[in-house]
Image (cartoon, rainbow, N blue to C red; front, side):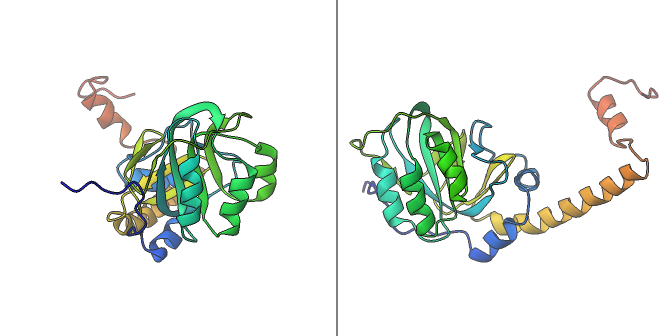
Length: 228
């Protein structure tokens, strides 16, 4: 059996038009229509709540505390890509800071998602570039240990394949499989319309959740004929 190379340069990305449409939706909307799956752990959060990102995943796996392969990924990624880095959730040393993230912005990447620590928070806030991380640490990384680029990874507890659709905002990050992403857009449109209609109904005073009695009966909380 032939072993895959550690660095895979050519990947099939989610289509740009899908990315453009997906960027108009909240991560929560996409997570709901995707079956409430594919969301990263809440530890992976934007450096600032107004940061938003959408694009195809360019995946990187590193050993905790070492960023050698992130440097290689920056050199290989294409404009519009989102670097998604499996840093094992390690917070003992920062994997990226202002210098690397400035290079990402200059190269036209859509953003960076790091399941590990980063540093230079105040400078990143001034950079005006979407960055999500698991936390911060002033300690710098090593640059010695091999890793992998554009292999399947686990980041924030969810599976990420190269080219998958990644959308992040104030609520966190959702990952949708590349092949399924186009089919999520119409569902997301309907979800937005349904929620807007529900908000209008609530504003008129209709605050009752009509599904609730049946759900409570199904859960055994209410008996047949009982109501709240």
